[in-house]
Length: 313
Image (cartoon, rainbow, N blue to C red; front, side):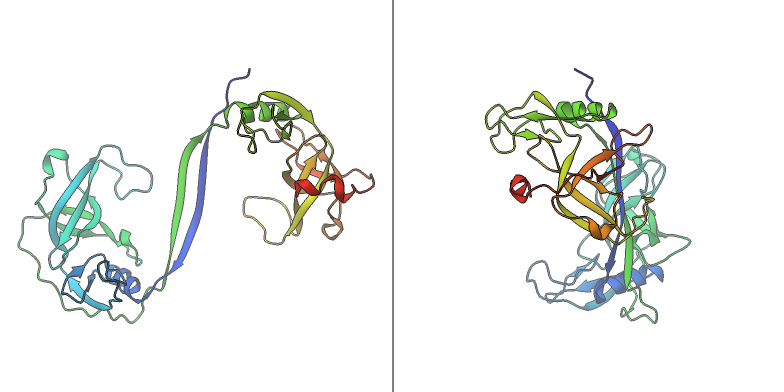
């Protein structure tokens, strides 16, 4: 039994969203070194502002300025900052109730150590040198011994409001495919495709999952399938992916390898995109050093009869 594989994996994409009038005013205000909250019908001031009262669900639009000074309501020390966090040295995560607000804002506090942080301590905003209309326009909070800054009277009206943001989302983790898929990947390195047969229903699943999704019983019996197969369904891709050096349009399809009871997906090449069809017989094309087929191409055989693959759609 080969050692179970594991590898670092990063999932990353830019998340783009538009802003409503309340969030637009809040982020634009940060760009202008103004902190805005929103006043509810019963007189509470919420910072950061929301568009609907969390208690009554009423729409709220009454923007009010609060002070850049406030009080720590609770905190936790961060011994080892991660990539993308506000500070690259150890800091405290704090909830700060700004003067004039009734709720707390989460951000970082720049402090020399956990002994310098306490609930009830006074802090103030440290503004970023360059501000673009994002929560990062507040670089962090810092300890403050001065008097409370009086809230201003800004109404939330700006000449050039921020209307949208792009927030990069990223997740770094270690992925392990498990015993069954480790065997599958190892076999692919030898240009073989193996699945596992369910001891109950006798279906062969490729890629194997270690258990039958229908019967719920463990699978262990390895079965070599393919290498040829049948296109069951497909789609034509017209948008070029940034990380793939493949010209559009191209075809991606589900392929039922001979002997398998589950279709896997792969790119279909060696044929004009508008000639790909259900039932097309294909075979894998490998490139030197690759751990999986680069694409599948037509074998030249007659198309498979629909009855032979209809259960695999």
